[in-house]
Amino acid sequence: MKRAILSCNGLDKPEGSVAREAAIRGADATGSEIVCPVLLNRAPARYKKVLSDSLLIVVDGCSTRCASKLAARLEAKVERKVLVTDAVKASGQPLESTLGLGPKGLALAQSIVDELVRKLNAPAVAAEPAAEFETPAEYLAVTHDKFEFRIPVVDYMFNENDVWVRVLDGVARVGISDYMQQKLTDINYFDAPRIDAAVEQFGELGSLESAKAVFEIVSPIGGTVTAVNQAVIDNPGLINEDPYGAGWLVEVKLAAWPQDQELLLEPAAYAETVKRKAAEE
Amino acid sequence: MAETTFMGVPREKISWFPTIDYDKCTFSMESDTFCPHHVFERREGDRKLVVANPNNCVVFCRACAKTCGPDAISFPGKPETIALIKRFASKRP
Image 1 (tube, one colour):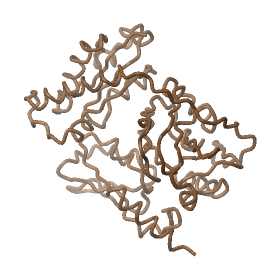
Image 2 (cartoon, helix red, strand yellow; image 1 turned 180 degrees about the horizontal axis):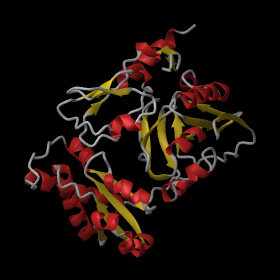
Image 3 (tube, chains in turn purple, brown; image 1 turned 90 degrees about the vertical axis):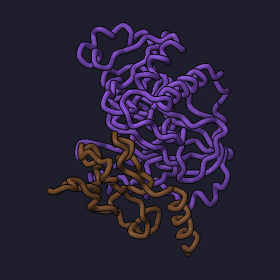
């Protein structure tokens, strides 16, 4: 599939200038077509064919994420995202405060492109799911107004951050609850953790994005990431369709399951949490 | 209504809530519009947005910071909070 690159046009911030520069260099380095965010917003028909034929690389300057929101609104298929403010923090080098790019800004734009190319060219990691998890047969239902939130009756445990875990043969499978997927609405991007990454209980296991929010996946368990769900990376909508089954996110080899369980909720207790959260909103 | 405990720890013992850097905040109100837990409140005067209900904040949630363009919202370090929760858990009968 072809690639296209959409960046924010943040002309009022140094990070926006870096995003624009990274998009120009990135288009060259990856053979992608540039998509102008202003024109895309004003006349989406201009890019209709490009977006339907291409995977999109999205470069946002700041956390307002204008480019990401535009891509979500137009239901573009996103392959990878870059956030310049994160890249600035990771580099440990503050940008020049001027809107025109100085040496630091130009160097950062190039390093963003180098990292992007490295990730796009990285061979797919063999990360086959370790175990056969059966789809839940029975659910508890929490209702609030016209909404119904389902919670499997057995086998699943939850943290209060709406992330579930299910364990089979020493391997934990992790995903988000039906309540959270409904709250996020249409999920369009899964920023997966690296295979072999070590994670602590309550640490971060990547993030999910919808037009509405960025959701940090708070890990219910500690251990080492052994697999990510490629089907969800390719089609994040699976999380909305089947959050407890095909929409699972990652598998983790457990480090301290007995202790982790002490800080998790059984389905009935999580149902009470969902009831309370739904009532507060 | 604020949650009273988080994973069995009294909520007021956990200092997890956003802090606004007023040198950076542009008062776009994106964070207030986004947060469904009424952590923020709008006010008159110079500081048009304040953290009015810190204990309403969902522990480990940093979603408002991730919506903040000028990067004006910060949270405490996660490791300290995790250690505190585990310390409480180990003392439970």
